[in-house]
Length: 270
Image (cartoon, rainbow, N blue to C red):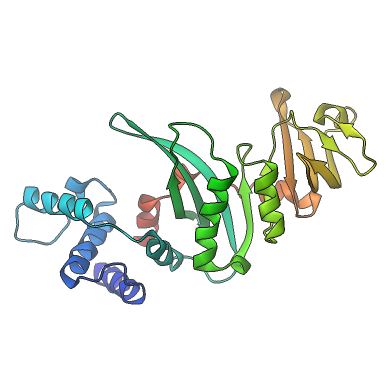
């Protein structure tokens, strides 16, 4: 099994030249195999699974030096990650997460694609603010990077939570013909086709669930799904897909914390 995976890794690098130097390419391949064998991303754990006559401490220092000195081309990284995806249309999810690296807080905006039972992160940006939301420009730039790799026509849809709204972001998706499904805060008003304005509570006074075609939300025309949830919560979705399909498509949203290298490694070893 290990030889098969090694052959697959070498084949991928032959298609996408992420690293040009032969010695570095071989060492990075051994690092990837160490990740697969250990199912860990800690350098010490990886070092234990790298075949070498050197001491573990020496291998660990070599790994540290590699990542300190080598600067990756993340467009090529995205191209490599895409090779793990099935052919055809892709469902994307945009999300944001915060990780602590020592005393430094990393605020990460990320887009992932679903591949079977796992999610593969395609591209990500470190936001300048410590824990604030992304702005529409951050999202558009991130999605543009992915479009440059896979093409716009390969995107089936993109799903996002209540953070990912705003007139400029939604207009960008509509203008580029990208299907979307976004959750909205309940405080946002809805303008129906008769130009009357309602709150979500007013529209759900006599019904648990309602659907609307061509409404205006935050200055953008879109379709709407409204549903009353337990404990006084609401599911308020907007998109350019049929209203009755929005709930089903929103369920495709997944948290980026569930994806990542360790999940991919786990699947590869099955």
